[in-house]
Image (cartoon, rainbow, N blue to C red; front, side, top):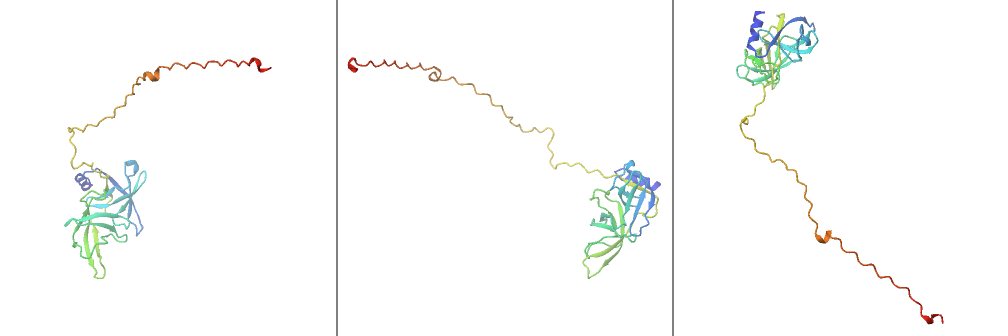
Length: 231
């Protein structure tokens, strides 16, 4: 208990102390159940550690308990890097034994027996620099382009009753490379000016003055028949 509380001081994010309530009996699954759940603020994805290193990750949350998948489970993958040369890789659990594999690395990779693997922190779940495992053996088969690398976890996966659940790391705020100073004047932006209504132009006299009406045609007198018309 004293070592657990002392280990939490070296991490920036807060941690909660949890107790292991149940360990699975499935020989092909490595999972445990802790006594903290959603009512205590636990979220899926949080890292679980002890005084030596990483134990696993919270994968399922209930109101008063949570399921933790251990690093030796075949369904869990952790981004790691070699502490000696900062070589990055992905560590997978074996599922059958308490070992961790580093698959898909070339046969001529620069890894030695005894190299220490730590979390790289590029996944946003595990803090950078937590111990994960130590390289136990390296098998370079000339018929295979990949090396078989077996690692042993450094954490006491099956030795303790108490673990620490780390809070999710907060993403850093983005800052531009050349921030604009606060006192810098902003370029003036021309505001659109509303168009004024055009004033009515005075009409020309020829168009305003009414032309005098034309005189009506003179009535045509009725034609008078000649006197001798009926004669």
